[in-house]
Image 1 (cartoon, rainbow, N blue to C red):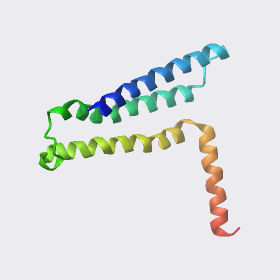
Image 2: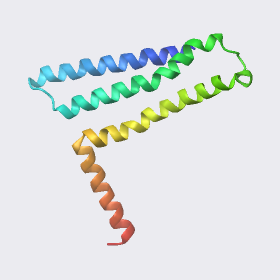
Image 3: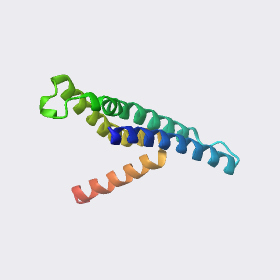
Image 4: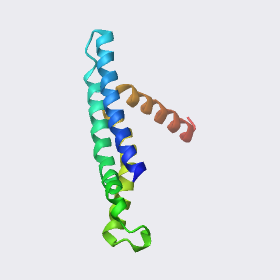
Length: 123
């Protein structure tokens, strides 16, 4: 339960600190940052918040669960597995978020794909 609760606090701290750094960067440059950066930040923070939520809920109810996972009900097992899977989905979603919102990342992927195709095809 301690780890789950702490990870929730870390998640909120990450989101808040990112927003604060984003605002500070806008003040330093005296310009508005591109909308792609804003969209990337909002999407990553939102998906992270939703992905960590089931795991944090499990962490809150864990003290009331049977200590031996073998004795858990089917719902408890499936819920725990889904909560852990959601953490992985969060990590995988970052690739797609960056692919959709960051032009330089798309260019990097395009170039690496082209180089790999040349290597495989022997041209």
